[in-house]
Amino acid sequence: MGSSDRQIPLEEFRRLINTLPPAELARVPPERLPDHIPLDLIENAPPDVASTIETLIFQRQSSVMHDLNRLREKLGSEAATAYDMASLPRISSDIRKLLERLREIQGRLRGEGDATLSPEEALDELEKLARVANEVRDYYRKLLAARKSLRRVDHRKEPELLPFLKKIDSKLRRRCAMHRKVLDQYHSQKLLVTVQIMHDYRERIIAGEEDRRNHARRRQQIEQRLADVRRKVRQFPANSGFRHLAERLDDELNRLDRGQRVLPIPLGEEELELWLDVIVDQRLLRDERESMRRLQQRAESLYLFLLRHYYKLQSAQQAPATRTTRDADQRGDYASHARNFLIDYFRSRIRSGITPYWVPEIYRLEKLRKLESALTELHH
Image (tube, rainbow, N blue to C red; front, side):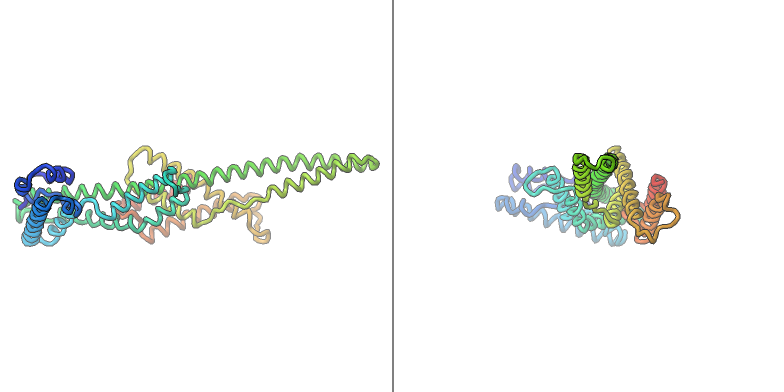
């Protein structure tokens, strides 16, 4: 069953088509053909070469069906399913689509082309790719299941098939690695963009708070000077210069207040939930790269800053009638709300199923609980 010779990579097979005459090409063992031969390779070949390729493909398909039926007969349907999956193209159409869209989004983020993207727009585009990413993820789960089923096969029934089964597992392992790599790229890109968005929010918040502090200092200076001038107006009512100066200071105070009327930075629980989804998904991956570990830490730090800011504003904007005697320590209010938000989020995440599914369940639950503990402790 099958050959021990290595499989011919697609690029090498293209070279053979362009260099070997049809008679020599026909002697290539069908089982050594690439798993997937693009249609354009046949369409663009000379007629005699195209005919030879079609014959080889037919022989390969016949060999695959023979192997598949024999595996099913000797070792059962699980081994046959694993072999069938190992025979499919290593790079699926979903993987190609996901990689192409990721490259396009990355290019537009860098300002390449006419239709550039802001980080917020890029995250929207990445969210739209969730369906394709889920297709890749689901197929990855099937590949993992096929490898597990292959290990359950009783090799003692047909010991001569063991080398062939190892070859199948090797193919499945390479396909798993490809799917995992693409999924890692997708989630890493989402985290990178999310960090950019949160950083921009943080800078705007810090700048706004600095503006408010400057405004308060300037207002206090004008008020103090205005109070001093008004005292002099009362002391020297005949001096029109003091009256005019008081009027100018009063106008300056009004202009300062009008200039301070800026719209609040739009930040809501919808954004906070989306960003936390991205952070959790990446944290659950077994990504040991130092750069991603630092990026993850940066993301968690930025997130906690924004979470505190959001609930601090919520607490400050409560109607006076709802205030309690704890007003002197408003931090107790907003810190409690922020902590409850985190607890509710993680409870919901556990109930709805902890993704990504390719990470073992025990590992996922442990990582999720550690992240919840880390965020709630850092929050204090």
